[in-house]
Image (cartoon, rainbow, N blue to C red; front, side):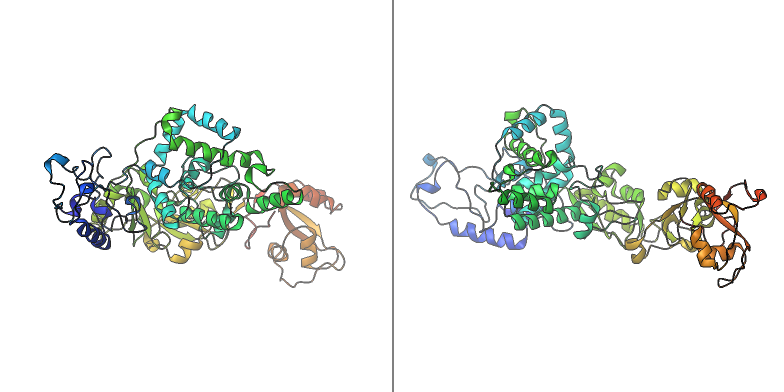
Length: 535
């Protein structure tokens, strides 16, 4: 019997096979009653390796279902009565005795629990809360299915406690699209500034705080940093929720007062006070679901997704179609996309369900000569209204606003990057610079009112403009003057100010001719060739 007949192909690497072959061959000549029991002995793995840490599937390997948890990998040894105890045991080449893969990710998580338990009334309160909501628990654990294996693999690789695999249950209920009222995003709930600190890109096209791989990498980096800082996992978790500075100050306060320096003894906000008890409650439920009348869905202990390289821009809908997965499932694995297109220069890899990755690659090759994206990026050369932009790029103003998230009555500022149809001169993939640095800046489409003012003795364009909150360049342009023109005392000048500010401006010119008051409002773009005044 071959080793490859016993273990799924995705778990086998040549170096592992050689190690196992050496171990088995060393056991082939053992004699004695310990080799003749009805229960086959457990085969030891190489040092530092467990069935749960066997290498992941090589690229392109087919997924095979692992053996059932109720079926051993090999038959048990024959009864003692059928064997001569003094006779050596003959093993088939490459046989594996007693080796049983963990087919359930929950069991693998349980075996990796390493944090000290917290036992108090808050934990029991949260246990009761979760246990009384079985439908919520089932939805939450089902939602974790695509992501748990990857998180568990990363935790084992870093030798971190497996309780941390449960932290997204507390942070976001394993929803990678979750956004808090404080603007924290993703299943690990990174704030914008913290995300940037841990190299999570946030731009027009993608937000890596929601990216499955990148956010997990950043979260574990952060948790390792906090544990190194505080030397205690409960304090590290409190800092993840409350901030390392807040926890540090709370510890300093307790130390100054001669109080204990443990998580339970710190004074902290209620959210942080319940944070570790929530995680402990979920840990207890995962450890013994039957004790809490909770059912955990079977999540297999093998990769759910595979990373696939893309070399050309491709629409999100097209990628899902080529992979033969629903748009909803595709977005669940690739939640970082902010726009309906994936830019190869900025996001060179996408995640796909393991079996669908091969389907995608095959279908992609069949479209090697065809365009995959219907969108590209365009930069505004100047501050423009949405209607003006739409006319230049060949789309309706409503579609432009919808695709780019531009509210009504907002101007697109100069240098902004917009997603526009890929056609004519705009038929090219987006450059790496725009993919990584594209941004959208908006300004209110301000309604201006024209007023007439009189220059005072000694006035310059700059001084008069400053008095009315506008630029000297605009004053010169509105009145067809040179930027360095000299003003004479009592000279009449036209100025455009925001409609709400016109009354204040009028008060500063009490001698204004009555005929100049009450002018109809005009749009900012009408008189201003060099842009509009900022509010």
